[in-house]
Length: 182
Image (cartoon, rainbow, N blue to C red; front, side, top):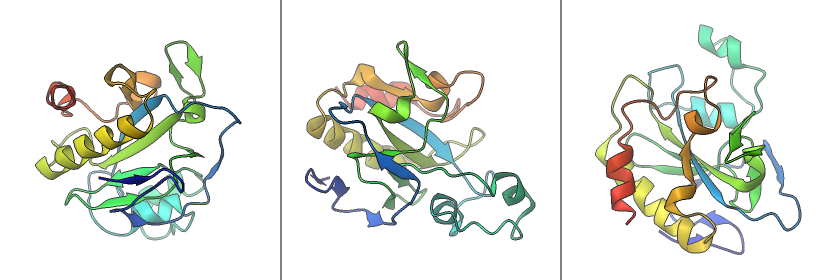
């Protein structure tokens, strides 16, 4: 998996530009990878709804759940869908709005120094084999291009926002994932 370091884009990802991002502070070192999960509506997969959420085009009339999130302005750098498709919303050098109120090793505002990767999933269902393969490949490429990110500087959303977030959920196989990065 190749990242164009000049543009901050993955070469083998579908590109969908999210307006929900901004510039990182000058001199900021990208030093954290945050793993999330998302499904829209909850526990339903496929469809255009994640793209719509991250591009501020989600129609709240389509599903009752969408009414509760219609005003959100959020994004992630990359989504890995259940079938392994990778979608990039924000270039890696830009700040995506994925972590919200967060703290990692005493440092708050994780969006400032992190890359956010969403897995299409939920807490109640295991992730697909292809998602692990793509996540491992992406993580290796991210660590190669952003050397301040090490296996010790990879966290779940639940780790940086405990009590507020649970993703990537109890069925995410951290042991398998971390072992594959060695």
